[in-house]
Amino acid sequence: MTHPSYILTTSTPDTTGIVAAITGFLADHGALITETQHFRDPPGNRSYLRAGFHDAGAGRLPEPAGFAAAFAPIAARFGMDWQLYEAARRCRALIAVSKQGHCLNSMLHRWHSGTLPIDVVGVVSNHDEHRRLTEWYGLPYHWLPISAAGKPAQEAQLLALFEASGAELLVLARYMQVLSAAACARLTGRAINIHHSFLPGFKGARPYHQAYERGVKLIGATAHYVTEDLDDGPIIEQEVGRVDHNMDPAELTSIGHDLESVALNRAVRWHAEHRVFVHGRRTVVLR
Image (cartoon, rainbow, N blue to C red; front, top):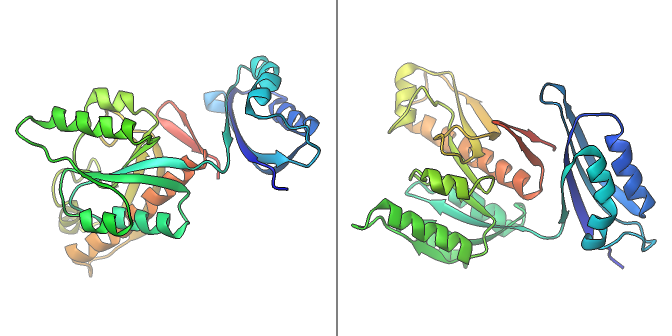
């Protein structure tokens, strides 16, 4: 008999006895811990824990509702923010893209091959370039051009689609439209963006050409949660690559696109696996 598996995440003011209380509770209720990570952040006065577990076979581990009731005294004792997730339940993600499709292509391939633990519910774009690719994977493609009605109307359509599709995460896979402050607030902790890591040095168009002209030696990519501070949300993952003067702008762009795809896929995976904790402007990622 296969027993359901769960993931418990906790964020607590830092003190003694947190790990012992949590693991002791799980042991007392017949849980077999299969994975655990813990991090203390003394400057932030927080303690973070992520534990994967399932019933060891004794039949004493309560279902989620019963777990919540039984765990409540420990949570109250430590002033704990906590969540319990069913490990088998995959995060439903809507992918937004504009003209550049490298991140979309990489993400769809990893999703289709089963190496990215999400359920893609569709692709949305303000351009029609990636319909054929999306539909090849058997996914709906939603073309939402910015019409004469303007950007607010198109953004409202995107948000309505996000809710109607049952999506839990919006992945901005090189979606080149800035979300409004209201949209960012509505999607707090539920939207991930990717951009090159030259910011704030090389803003605007053709950043890899700007990097070539300045003779940079490192290029990279940053995946972060979306906030109203453009490209300045809590960072989840970054990737870098060394380059040199032999490489022209086209080669820098190709390398940069690979780095962007890798960083974005990692960030989405860690979010879907409930490994990311946000504290202020930074994140803790328990891998």
